[in-house]
Image (cartoon, rainbow, N blue to C red; front, top):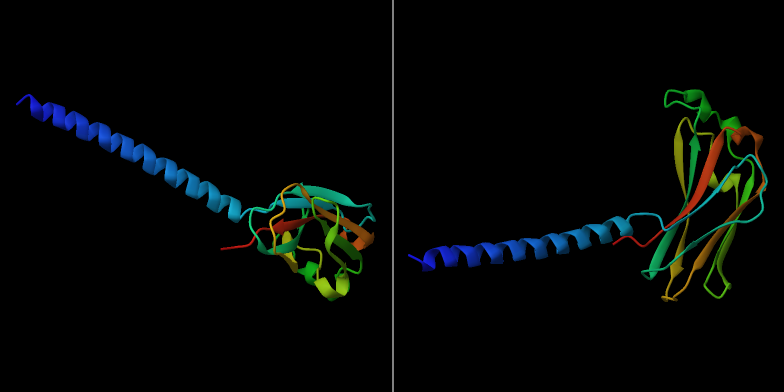
Length: 170
C-alpha cells in the first residue's frame, strides 16, 4: 500500500512537468503567430500636408514577399457617411516610398499618385494595398521604411495615414 501513494505522486509530478512544457511550447507558437501577422514597421503622415521623409526601422525575420499597405483613418467620420465616396474626392496627391537595407542602400522605391490608389476620404478607415516587396536574403541589422507626401491633397485634411510593411504570410 505504501507504493501506491508514491506512484500517484510521481505520476502527478510527471503530468505537471508535461503540462508546463506543453504550455511553454503553446506560448512560443502563439507568440510566433502573432508576430507573423503583425506589421513590422509603420510610417505616419498626413496626406493633406507635404512632408519630408518619415522613417521607421524594422528587422527582417523571414525572406519572401513583404507587402506594403496604406492605412487611412478619418477620426471625425462615421460608417454611415456615404457621401464620402463621391468620385470628386479621389486622392489627387502623390507619395514617395522607399526601403533601405542595413547598409543604407535603396532596395525598393516607388512614386505613387492618387490615380493608382483610388483612395477617397474614408468614412472611418480604409486600407490600400500598395505593392509587394521581395526580400530574397536575410541581412542582419535595421532596415528602414521611408515615406513622404510630395503632393498634398486638401480633401484629406481630416485624415491621418500610416504606411505599413507586413511580413510574408505563411
